[in-house]
Length: 300
Image 1 (cartoon, rainbow, N blue to C red):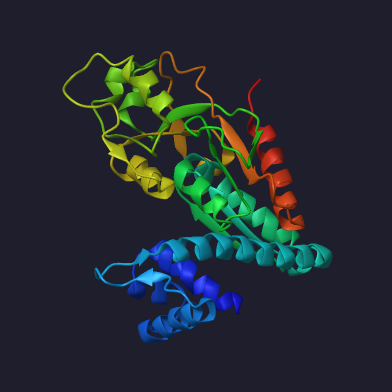
Image 2 (cartoon, rainbow, N blue to C red):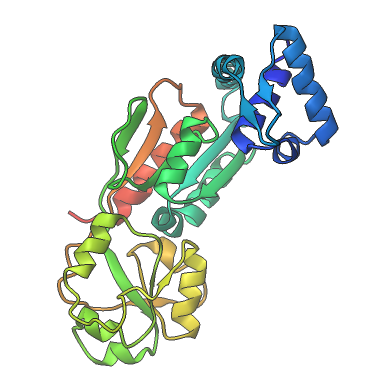
């Protein structure tokens, strides 16, 4: 029996249809169907119930799927162990970043890592913490960095807290609010106010301070910090972001707004890894780099 056939069954279960699974594993749909049929012949059992026009695994299919996931994970770990012996020169790195973490760390961290280790193959995924957690559990990521306040502690996950960094509201130079001195949150709401997807705890913090009822504080929610930055520069928008070097990476700079009751808002980042998975040299190097960058921007 080939691991490749087992990987096709896993793809079918994850994607939910033969068409999407075939695309995910770069096969034609007939070729994927033949692979699944061959796997069923190997086991002498029907693994997929095709009667309803949908992908439904039989009891035997569920049993084989669970074993297939374990075998494929073991095979990936063997490959990683061999890469550990090769060191960073031949390493691969798959990293996840939450929206705030991407804005603060993504570009500078990637630049430094590639400068130090130009032979690395790097993939960076930007998503919300829950999505990153799911990808980590499926071993699609080596680690991720995000605000973990909304993530429930789960068996098999390891959280390493990072230094705190201040969070603030920013606008482009010349914004009318800069002439008003210390501001209330209600004053910000005369303009578009934007942020990435925020933890529920942070949203509740803001909602408890707003008295205006004509609109929500955040009128734009977007996980692409470059888009938010452009909103501040071109549309008199106000954006919430970490107060870090990574925020101002272009020719035009953003300016921090003095907002009442916001002087204690901090990030709550963690590096999240799987406890059962050995970190590669590339992952360890990236983790150390992230910690150093956060420490240089941290507040007491």
